Length: 96
Picture: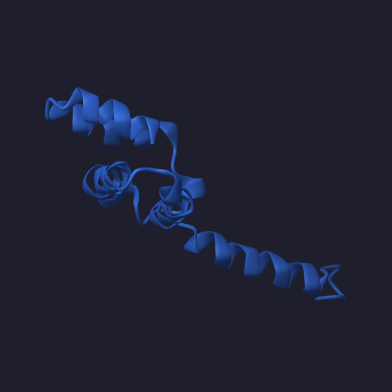
């Protein structure tokens, strides 16, 4: 690799970083966020937030790497909630 002008250390770091990014899914990040802030919320509020994400967002976006999710994909997930006629739930889910 050195003969070809490629630094093996940088290559290894890039491969390691790529592996970490693949495990940073939307669900993992969202659950970490919830765990961090839930102690400062009322228990019922924290339960509602995680339940909304579990019902309406994680099934479609939960297993995706967070960096690969685009705004139109998130909007599509929110439109699914609106299609059920639960506009307030869609609005609150967007805020979360």
